[in-house]
Structure formats: C-alpha cells, structure tokens
Image (tube, rainbow, N blue to C red; front, top):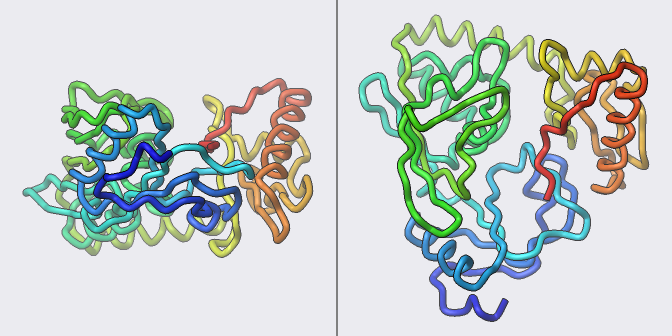
Amino acid sequence: MATLTGIATKLTPQLPLGPRTWFRLGGAAEHFAEPQSADELIALVKRCKADNVPVRVLGSGSNLLVRDEGVKGVVISIESPCFQTMAQEGAAFRIGAGVQLATAINETVRLGLAGLDTLVGIPGTIGGALHNNAGTRAGDIGQWAASATVVTRSGEVLTRTRDELVFAYRQSSLDELVILDATFELERDEPEVLTKRMQKQWIVKKANQPMSHQRTGQIFRNPRGMSAGMLIDQAGLKGATVGAAEVSQKHGNFIVAHDGATTNDVLKLIDVVRSRVAERLGVELEPALEIW
C-alpha cells in the first residue's frame, strides 16, 4: 500500500474494526482513514481508484459483521463532524450521512417535523439507513427522501433527485460508494404529539429486542408477509448456539455474541439457522447483515 503516500488523509495501519461495530468482533482494517472534509474523502477515493486499492465505508457498524481475518485495502470512517451536519429548510431537512438516525429523529421531532419519528429504535447512521431503506411497519426512510448527494467509486460527486431514487423492502438504488448527505421532505406536526408517539413506539420496540448493552445484531430480512424472528422461533432455534454465539432468547432474529465469541461462530450459527428454517419450514432466509 506504499502507493498511497502523499495524500492529505492520515492512514492508520492494522486498526481493529471490532470495537467500531455492534458485535465488537472481527479483525483489523489493513488501512483506516478518517477524512476531515468531503474534499479529503473524494481525493482519497480517487487515489484508491487510480491505484486499484479496495475501499469500504464504515458508519456506526450496527449492521456489519467483520470477518476474523480482517479487511484488505482502505476502510473510510465518516465520523468526522463534517459528515454530521443538519439544517432545516422549511419542512425539508438536510442531514449528513454520518448523523446517527436517533439524533436526526430527536431533532426533527423537536422542530415539529413528522416522518422520521416512525423509525425510532432503529440503530445506525442516516447513510446506512438510506442505503438499506431502514423501516418499520409504520413506514420506511425512503418515502421521505427528496434527494441525496453521493460519491461514486471513481470519486465523482452526484446528486440523486427524487425521480432517480428507487426504494424497496430493505434496499435502495443508492449503491454508490458513499452517501454524503440527504434531504428529506417532512410534514408539520406538534412536537408534543410526535414525542408521545415516538415514546410509545420506543417502549414497544425495546420490550421485544435484546438489551442494548449486549453485543448483538439483527440477522435476516423478513420474508414477504412473514416474520424472520417468528420463523426462527417456530423452528425451535431460540437459544441455539455455536461456540459463544447464541440466537437470542428474546427475539429469534438476533444473534448475541457472548464473551469469547468469534465472527466465525456467528457465521456458522447463521448457516445453522438458515438451513434448519429451510428444512423445517421451507423458507429461505436472506441475511440482512453486511459481511466484510
């Protein structure tokens, strides 16, 4: 990786990625970068493209499982303040991709803007939420998106307008390397009404999921018209283990990594769950996790 000398962004070699993910598992990034501006990020992406160096972008790590052997190339973090800006423009709200979804929800509710509040309890950043079209039964983030600024894998900056954006269940057309920011067209409502509604949703969601202090993650997409967690429960897999990884006793669609767990334990347990659900119930589960 000596070809990446002379760039503005500092590269940290062999930085462990586990502590930056919710599972807190996995190996190191060959090189880790934290650009301090969009221009720095773009220059780094262009250099990596020119030198044929693999690049990945890390948000909050809530939907990520890093393999034990680590990641080749450069991993770019978008935790810098420059990727965490928020600005109101009437009923529209522009949000940086590095902003935590929970932070964006709290701010829009405070301002009396409805829409994102239906996503309460979903972890991750705005960028990750848009890329995966995060949602609940009450709706998804894509229905509120008006535009998004993105960086392609070659370092080109583009604005994707509403008529270019396509959203489906837990997926979107935003598959470029980086989402820099997005604008959402929200609806006016009373902050007190939104707050009460959000609190009710939060209580219900947290009552049915593993505790927040656990090293855990949601594993599978819900098949059309079905609940992955319910299918896993019906297959008798709650509490199933491989090594120190366990299917949550509280919600079947979560795996908990106990002390001593490895990414390989989690991957093997995912395979066990998929094969048994397919064998016993005839349903093929699709992973929702990103695996590096």
